Image 1 (cartoon, rainbow, N blue to C red):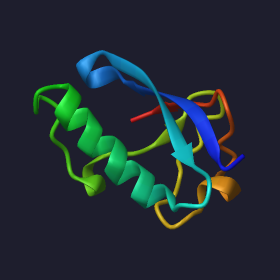
Image 2 (tube, rainbow, N blue to C red):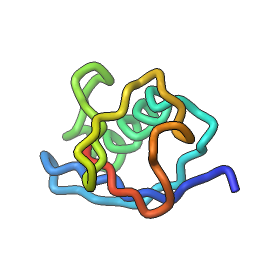
Image 3 (spheres, rainbow, N blue to C red):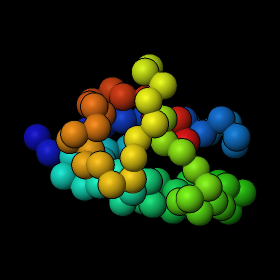
Length: 83
């Protein structure tokens, strides 16, 4: 299986949703896709650049680096990620 089902939590717009992400992509690519979908889902009320946001594991508090692959990041099925 090459996809993980994660929960994305965005406290600033009080938004939470589940998304499948591929494990063979870099975190920066995933972050860009998440930001694009957040902008679309929030009717552009959440319109941030990749440099302006951090992606953090809710359980461990670890921040994910943009150049790290998802499979090497510790993200797994059921992970909760805060943007």
